[in-house]
Length: 81
Length: 156
Image 1 (cartoon, each protein chain N blue to C red):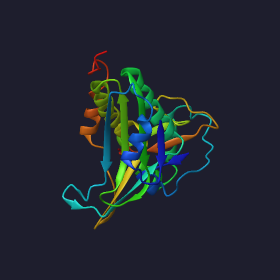
Image 2 (image 1 turned 30 degrees about the horizontal axis):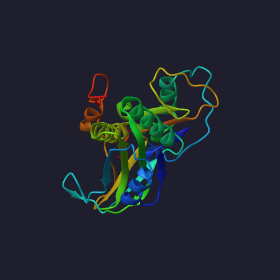
Image 3 (image 1 turned 90 degrees about the vertical axis):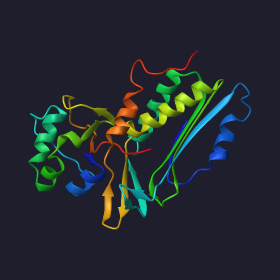
């Protein structure tokens, strides 16, 4: 897992290795499981309309599958340029 | 060509390098984004740009490929900086070169609109109240949406 911008600040770390339970098969299920990991996670993920997800460095939607070994990144809408 | 770097860039030198020896190019368009010293009426004393190394390069390459697909371009350069910057500093450079001005101008406009919403960069502004993550703006999404299907394309 990788966390960027205010998600990193709220969760309190830039990244971590996590073993999700076997029944976590999609991005949406992963986010749901993460929310239960502590206050920082719950706060960071309280409004999913401002959370974007990339799996293996490709931007994806909530129904995208996740598997062991995937690089999953959470970040807010992009503000470059 | 894309570059993601901490260092500043020289617009003139980049433009010269891009067009050197390529005499089929008839027009070059460019956009330079700068750090402003205010945001929503508040003074901004500096800014830090964070990005997602690896994905940033992939996203920018995809954006360049999309522009080359849509317009007959001889060359494209996107340089995006990250790290700490002061007001007035350059953040991003887009240069497009084509036989004709319309393709160069439209592709340049497309690239900066598309990049703002599709490349994984995040701005943290420094204000009197401390650091503030910049919110994505609906106007940026609308500017990017303008280029989805059935949008202006250069005349061949």
